[in-house]
Image (tube, rainbow, N blue to C red):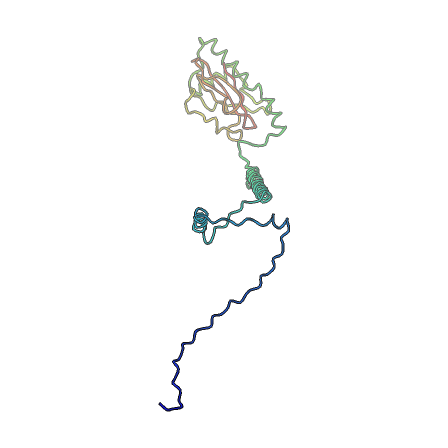
Length: 251
């Protein structure tokens, strides 16, 4: 060690300088008014029960809640009902128009059947004159029966023609034209000696048909003669000029 040299001092560790906290200036608080103090809600006390309920609310609340469906307003419902009623009314009117109109059929000319000619006033007048044409025949049959024990002239046309010659010398004449009638058919009721439905003035004028066991019932094709329980009764008839009506007499 040199003479003038001083011995080295041991190095002392440097102690950190403690920092003094910076004093913060307190912000002066404004006094609260009485009204603000009343409106300020009291702080909610966190309790285990409140914490549990908050957690349950968070768990049960869906992330994307389903929007609530709103019903139709009263005005919308009234509009829908009114529209439906109008549609139903229109449908009903259309159906009524469809079913109320009669089906249009093509107009065809009225056929002129030979057995249904138009009846003129002249024909009606002539038929009226023929009203009593068969009366003489009826009187002759009744007279013949009175002389023959109630029997009829027979079942043959020749027998009836002979009877007419004996009791009606001039024959049975047309009261309108004077034409002579002839016996054209003779049979029992129900037998096929004549088809009344097919008789017409054009084809069968001045022809007399005699049905045994029958009597008169009317003057049309459907009822001119009917069956009779009397065995000695006969119906005698002829078609008139209108081809619809008949003269018929019975003993």
